[in-house]
Length: 199
Image 1: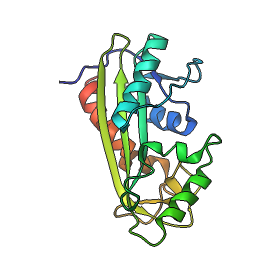
Image 2: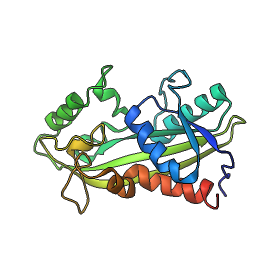
Image 3: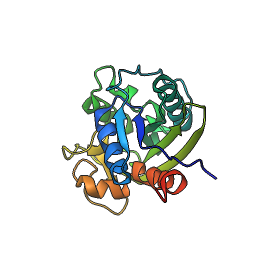
Image 4: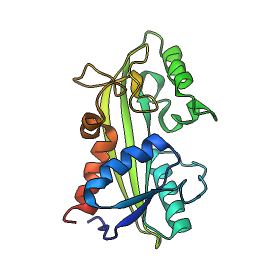
């Protein structure tokens, strides 16, 4: 059984503002005061893991140890079958130091060419405690890629990803709708069931 989160404050172990806002919105109904790692001046650890799970755990544990508070980290990315799973755990790195996701999306398009455009967004949430406790939750959203990018909402690769059964990209749909069907939403539902239910 997963460890329950009983506090009222936790750190969102991310320096990605879009990700911080999305996670904070998911946490809001539970009365949890979420503070971003950047706000606390916590360093951004190097992501040396070889999986979404390993990198999420690494980030959450580092923030929990540095802040003395339970910390929630997300490691997520776009997995494109025809590219052998790339960009995968390197999704953010494809955007470079400038975090230029327009360039990253163009690279996906360039490398994909006319091959199969099916793709999956993956998110792993890691909840870590300062005493070393850790819980992991994985969520996925299947779909396909479009070009050119569409929509100004969301962040990252959202403007080229259309979820299965939909017609709009994650960059076009309303945030409230995305919070119901995204990879992060699926991972968060598991986190709620395991750690936050009955608060």
